[in-house]
Amino acid sequence: MNVNGQRYRTIWTADTGQDVEIIDQTRFPHVFTTTTLKTVEDAAHAIRVMQVRGAPLIGATAAYGVALAMRADTSDDALMSAYSLLLATRPTAVNLRWALDRVRKALLTVDEKDRVAAAYKLASDVCDEDIAINMAIGLHGSEIIANIARTKKPGEKVNILTHCNAGWLATVDWGTATAPIYMSHDGGIPVHVWVDETRPRNQGAFLTAWELGHHGVPHTVIVDNAGGHLMQRGEVDMVIVGTDRTTASGDVCNKIGTYLKALAARDCGIPFYVALPSPTIDFTLTDGLNEIPIEERSGAEVSSLTGRTKSGSIETVDIVADGSNVANPAFDVTPARLVTGLITERGVVDASQQAIAKAFPDRISASA
Ligand code: MRU
Image (tube, rainbow, N blue to C red; front, top):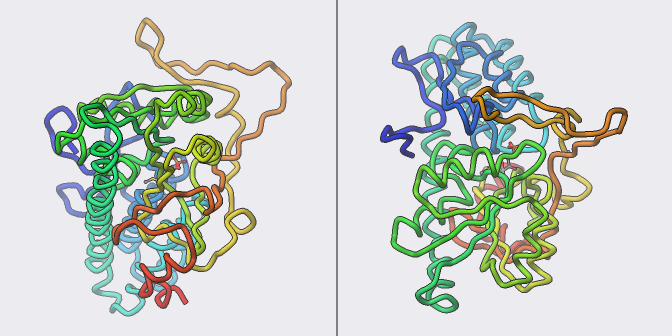
């Protein structure tokens, strides 16, 4: 995507070809800065503190993390310890395990002397594939938006609600939930996006709004609790969200608060779509509510807020009464029955075990 006229991916190799550059997402929206990862520990740290976040980008960073580890030591032991270190960084997004399994499996078949080059190539392939997947999701999703524009809103803008950031910052490029939006906008369909702020880390207000603004997509940031009201008033035509892990039966785990949007959408008869790249499908699970590990994050994310003061400095302030307990579950699970469709790289698929298996028979056998 373009940032002030310069073309960016969210992760790339430096001119040396071996250091890895990322956009530091902890500084948004007020500071755009990049950071260099030189070691596997740097990569693990970047994922853990959410300098990089979003399921696909976590996977891509982990793949490069293994390459950084190989740069220091190409032994099997180093490979295994890089795998374990990176896998432990965040528990919910399954793209992390998907990327690490893929890279580890491939490297174990490669002679140690060739592992550095092979690891960088594997990581680069993960990134290129992510972009191709997201572009395909964009094409399939933009057909849904075009259909709504044609049949329900001729001559008017299509209002789309999204939650968290499933934008290009969450992927290598394009985003998942945002790819259909960018393609529709670029194709001349008038769209407007309701951006859930997404407390506690404000990925909507900090990241999605920044992205859409840079691409010129009309959007409005709302508090998380406003979505139901807007849906009741007919001001939302569809919902598109991303996902961190979707089970083989179509249960969708995504940023906390997604489930409430799905409930409100169902009550109001509004289509609720999930943009789902196949590396985010966990074919080993069928019961999202009981089987998907939900990350519990620090209560400090709930009890404080960071922002820019009038004088321009970035400050963090406490917002919860002293002494109150706080809890911070970071994801929730939307049962498959509330999902209108899964927008995958292979087309729009029903959120059911049968439909997912039919669309991805090769992935099922690979994960067995
Ligand atoms: O905690 P985060 O910011 O990593 O959570 C991100 C999300 O929940 C996204 O919606 C999801 O990863 C899909 S990104 C294409």
